[in-house]
Image 1: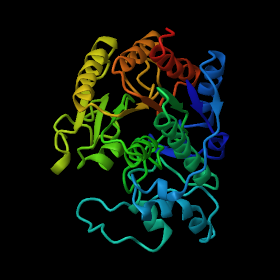
Image 2 (image 1 turned 135 degrees about the vertical axis):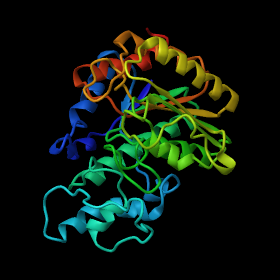
Image 3 (image 1 turned 90 degrees about the vertical axis):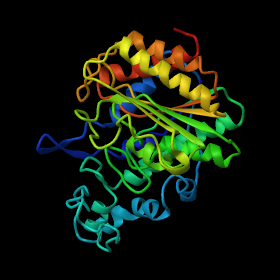
Length: 343
């Protein structure tokens, strides 16, 4: 299987507001490096750098003004005389009008954010654009006839909505790839998110559309981040009603419960009959992940790959979460090995 990877991800490593304090982010460069090392150790296949794409290639999934904000935010921040990492300090919550885009960078940061977990620094734009380019390059491989590809994206993307960043995510790599597939002539695409956390951003982007089915298995949002999306009754709106399927699972979910949800997802994907499938590949479902509470074990990821292969659809795997660095490489690559029948 082809892997697409850019070392530009190393240019971004931020802080986050967590447990009442600013600390180094769990989303660190070592995550991608650990996965890459396992890709090479297992002989998964060739590793290539992503092709170059334009901002317009991101603006199908996102708005142009949001992409423009991301591209220029660091320079606007520096222009105020501040050199620390940029984080929002106010959000347009319920009761505030929230429809006017502020002119000042502090206002823009809040306008385009869902939390204080996605800082912007000098290397952020280079890292997030190379991450999106990896997903686009992987989708182009599928459009060229490949059965599967692996976009080793970092930073991840599935919490980024059409006009907001959050949860370590800026550009929604999986959604950008799915939109690129539609733009390339596909009539239907499915996105299956198996990260522990609900892919609220992907849901937001495709919620009113029938051409992209979004299915997500994740921790129950009443007790799990991002808290405000991912409930089973969120089914889509307008033309997209029925094309959004959330499968929230309780604390302590182990293989049996996860497998049941995966089978349900497979049935929905089969009924949609997509031309391509995008997997938001999070492995923070692992039993020892520091910020999640499922109980999957390392051999279970081989089974996940085997199940996805049984859907019999050209598949792009896009790396999302997973924060137990010692195990993230083994678990992520096990999914790919299982998909290829190399368990």
